[in-house]
Picture: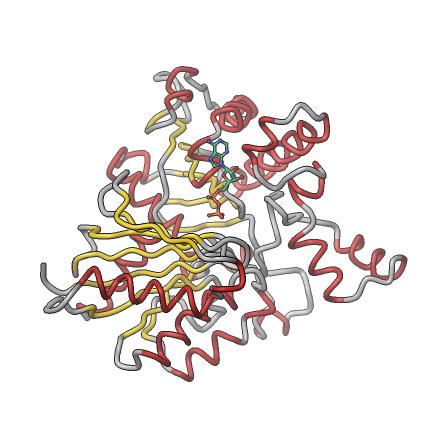
Length: 391
Ligand code: ADP
C-alpha cells in the first residue's frame, strides 16, 4: 500500500478517525474513541463489521490529548514501516468569513480559528485541540482544516444578513450555516443516485444530535437553518434552536442568568433533553411511554416542518427532500411524520421503502421525491485533503 492520508473528526466526547489512499477513494481503516471523560473506548475497524482492535480506559486515564495520541499511534501501527502518512485532515466547525475553503494549518491560522470558539463552544475547542496536539508531537505532518461553514459562503446577502445595523455584517455578525461537509457529501451522492433531481431544488435534513436543514439549488447552498452559531434553527438533542431573543433578555433579568448560564441553558439543557426531561437521545425517547417523550418528539417534528416551509419558499419550490445523519438515516417514524407533513409540497411516502430506509423512500408517482442518503463527513474531509495535496 502506498502513502496514505488520515482524517480526524473530533467532538466533545468522541474522536472519529479514518485512513484513506491518496485519492480518498479507498478507506483502509476507520475507528473512534467514544466516551472521553466518562468511559473511553477505542474501536478500530477495517471493513464494515470487522473489528480489528478494542481498548477501554477508566474515566480519568484518557483526556482529549491522550485520545489524540492513542489515535495517532494506532494509525502509525496500522501503517507500519515503509508506508508514509502524508497528511491529516480535520473537521473544523467554524471558519468565519476568512476561511471559505480548506487550508493547510499553521500556528497563525490556528490562532485565528481559536477566535471562533465563542461562536461554536460545543465544537470548535474540541476540533482545534487535536490539531494542536499533533503539531506539538509531529510538527512535520501536514494538517488540513476543512470547515463546516465553507459550503454556505456563496449564499446571497439576504440569506446571510441579520436585520441589525449594517456595520455588524461587515464585522462578521452574520448567518454562517453549519454541517457543510455533510451537505456537500450528500448533495454529491444525490448526483450519483439521481443526476436530474440533483440539478433541481433540494432540501437536505441533517438530523443527528446536532440538526439543521439546508436548501440547495444546482448543488449550491441557498439557505440553511443554522445561523451565526450552531444553536440556531431546529430543535436538537440538547440545543433549543431558534428562540425569541426576548426570552434570553427576560431570563437574564428575571432569573439573573449570566452569559455562562444562558450558554449552558440553550446549548446543553434544552432541545429533546430539556423538553422531555428524559433524554437527548431519539432512541430512548422512542422507547419511552412517557407523554413528555412524545411531546418532545412532536415539537422536534413540528419545528422541522415549519423550517421546511421556509426553505421551500427560499428555493421557490421543491424537487427533492433528503434525510441524513443518525435520526434521518435510522428513524423511520420521524421520516414518515416529516414526509406526511410535506404532502402539501407534493411528497408522497412509500411505507415499505421508508421502513427499508435506503435510497428513494417516496412513492413512484410522488411529484417531490424523498431519499435517505447516509452522510460521510470523514470521506468529504479526505477528498478535500487529497485535492489540496494535488495542488
Ligand atoms: P452526531 O450529531 O453526534 O454525529 P448522530 O448523527 O450520530 O449524532 O445522531 C445521533 C442521534 O441519532 C441520536 O438522537 C440517536 O438516538 C439517533 N439514532 C441513531 N440510531 C437510531 C435509530 N436506530 N433509531 C432512532 N434514532 C436513532
